[in-house]
Image (cartoon, rainbow over all chains, first blue to last red; front, side):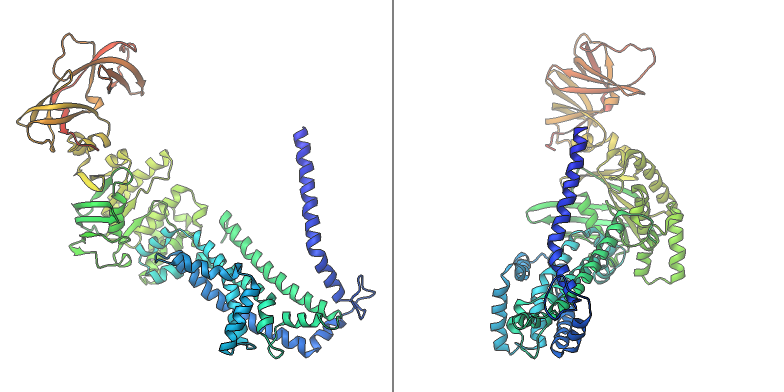
Amino acid sequence: MTGLRSDRVWAGLRAAICVLVAIYMIAPMIVVVVISFSAAAFLHFPPPGLSLQWYRRLFATPEWTSALLTSVEVTLPTGLLATVLGSAAAVGLARATFPGAALIGALLMAPMVVPVIIVAAAVYTLFQSWDLNGTLLGLILAHTLLTLPYVMANVRSAMETVDRQLENAALTLGATPWRSFWRITFRLILPGILSGLLFALVVSFDELVVSLFISTPEVRPVTVQMWSDVRGAVDPTISAIATVLFSVSLLLLLADSVFRRRRGSDAAGGLVP
Amino acid sequence: MSAGILELRRLCKSYGAVQAVTDVSLTMAGGEFLTLLGPSGSGKTTTLTMIAGLAQPSSGGILLDGQPLDPLPPYRRDIGVVFQNYALFPHMTVARNVAFPLEMRHAPRAEIGRRVGRALEQVGLAAFGGRYPRQLSGGQQQRVALARAMVFEPRILLMDEPLGALDRKLREQMQVEIMRLHRELRVSIVYVTHDQEEALMMSDRIAVFNRGRIEQLGEPHALYDQPATAFVAGFLGESNFFRARLLETLGGECRLNGSDLHLRARAGADLPGSSGSAVVAVRPERMRLLAPGAAPSENTVQGTLTDVIYLGRSNKYIVRLATGQEVTAVEQAVAGRQTPSLGAAVQLAWQASDAIALADTPS
């Protein structure tokens, strides 16, 4: 009986801790979101009234709209490039038998562990001699470098769950290695690839440090615009753009969890058509 | 379905310093059920993998219907393979799995549907085409794997321990089913197993593998009655072994002497010359349990009964000899017959024609 009661106490405690941590993590975000709908002309919480004026201001200010556009122009190609390159590398390395494969894998993962500021300085110096600083292409290449490890990690773990015998079976059934890959392996790692793509999009869209180094006032993603904005006069426009960014990330992560949910229920069984 | 004729010529495979398969040669008749039998690591699966084209032989050749297979990649060989863990594609329905080899061959749609339906019918899964592999039991998955490997009418069917993951009852059921399919479809099958009972029951011929080599190739009863080596005598069924010195060989029969042993036995195939050391193998069911005899005579051993194991139709007796060796005898259970009590002195006797003398090789 005491065991049962202590179980219940523990369960309650666990739930309470989870709620507290969630509040701790989300509360600042909620404050920002609420302020973005403020009717006041300054950052004040709770706001005296509600309005959409800061969103109107946001989308009417060319600096913000062009920054948002730049972010989209960087993020989408980055996501695509990082996904294609990262997936190819992950598949190749998972099946690799050549010497140095482990080293190449470690090097490709490096941007995830090397301090961002060092990557930023290195990229800046390199791009200086290539004339890539302040260009869309430069931002895309730098972001691809940063997001590649996320794709690779996702696809590699997906590859590990694919039984090699399946590819062998496909070969004996008459599929060339190429068709065997597309019809079997690719289909099975597709959720991992999509998950990697979403991570790459989130990381690229939110990236600040490297962008700060290599962007110019002409080509400036939204995170850099925010950075320079908060250093000047602060009004609730910044919380409006923060809310926009927050929503984009949230949507991408939600999409990812939907993918995972689908995959999970697939594995668990049930009468799926 | 065609009944391909497979020929292996001095096949060798080494991984670095490890010799996995050495000098394996055999010729299969069309429509034959040939089993590669051996303990794990004996080279049987490696041999199968080379026939399928998933591994390249280090030397030697493989011919199918007289044509060398070596230049062909696995997807051009037209060989069906049933893998140990079925290797069904988890993201495809049963019907799509079975249709896969036909799609790879660009068969017309209507024909694919017809042949998939027939193949699923043959394995008793006509109603399961829309299911996913994970929604099936192990036995059903096995049948799907079988249907998928047969549906494109391969020249030959390879099966790698296909029943290893099934429980005993299901395994016996599937054994019968595979034999039925073999009979009906007249397909040549190379079957790999480590289960000697399965091999004896299903095969036209068995190749016994040990340490990468074929120890003996023959029909089940020939292997059982005429083992060519001590390894075969021990691996296929049970055998009692007696170490002895060869005295003389005369007209297929030989006399041997061991410690307190006078033996007369058939001369085995690998017996070296007419002297030297040998082992004599005797099947437990060929031994008779007698009351202790007066003087030690030919083909008898004296000992103490240490165990009687009741097996229903038969009794199994364990007799410990003076040398410490334990000998097993199996006798039909006869109603009302008194068995000697444990610890009693007993004698085991057998006929010279039931014993076979073989070379004493380490195995």
